Amino acid sequence: MTDELPYPELGSEWASLRFQKEEVLHLDTAACGRTSHAVQARVATYLAHEAEVGGYVAEASMASVFKNGRAGLGALIGFTAEDVAFTESASTAFVQLLASWPLEKGDTVWALRSDWGPSLAALIDRGLRVELLDVDSRGVLDVDALERRLRHSRPALLHMTAALSHRAVLQPITECLVACSSREVPVILDVAQAAGQFAVPEGVAAVYGTGRKFLCGPRGVGYLAVSKVWQPALHPRAPALVVEAWPGEDRLVRRLESREAFIGGRAGLAVALGEFHEMGAGRIRARLDAIGRAGRRVLGNVPGWSACDPVGAPGAIISLEVASDYVDLAVVRAKLLRQKVVCSVAGRERAPHHMTRPLLRFSPHIDVTLDDLEHVASCLKAASQ
Ligand SMILES: *Cc1c(COP(=O)(O)O)cnc(C)c1O
Image (cartoon, rainbow, N blue to C red; front, side, top):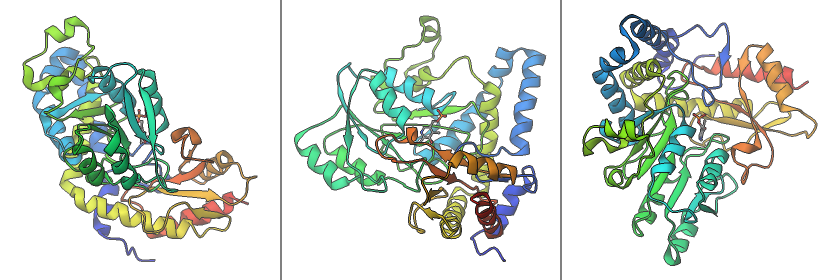
């Protein structure tokens, strides 16, 4: 079958930068994307450089690399380079952010019923009162209900998982921002899945995410970004030794950056971001979107399975529901792995207030073709027998 998906040459180029997929058909980007040879080489060279000249000397020579990395990342998530700080993961970024955000224990915050479970837990750990906002059956925020609620109450902040990990859902970010700006409610977005799949609009108070998913950076590098308006309000909980050493007011967000970190990984992420922009973020997003649609159509037709989201849903996440209660998704995943197809089981803990049962999740990147999707469908058929 010919590849009717947009920008097939982009998919081939992306594939040519990586291990060939004859080995493994990887449809697990939402868990962890595949790094390119250049990203791997950058990490390795940096580690060698650390051993040669000393870790802190090596780091000091990287300022312009990291500045480019921050700029490349900021461009995808609606911020400038100065607003971005690196951490180890999306989770550590959110914990850092919450620890420093001007909040008192007992403050009320709003979050979506379909939000990422561990982020909801982090809000509770911080001593906040979490009120859950209504979503529809797919997990999409009910903006009208939000507007009504804002007329008589106002939270200290609103948290929203911009794109869900278990479904093909992009939240109505702009509408939410408009509603919240009328009451000056800061909006914090989890962009762990959104970054790379979707354009993130400007005007958000803060975002956090990870480089290893659709951006295909190395594991162990996350990030956060805080708007210039909110940076002066941050109270970093860093040790005094570190705070003393920090430069002027213009880089307040960088006080939230982990000082001891996987510096080589940050260099690798900068390379991944360079590749992403060179290929064209818009073209990558368009191809991911088309692959997601094709995947929901092809895999949703496998007997005994159905796509959770409409074929036309946004982005590259393809979640399947199994018809029978007696099928163990972990067993299906293991069988697929033996057929060299990598995917995930999305358990309820990802969105405990929204998911009612686990789902089988496929999340291709732009190298996947229609032929590959047909092949995965036949593997799934075999794995379900
Ligand atoms: C993966 C993910 C996270 C957590 O990212 P880590 O880097 O593993 O901490 C948070 N939110 C969403 C929506 C995710 O998909």
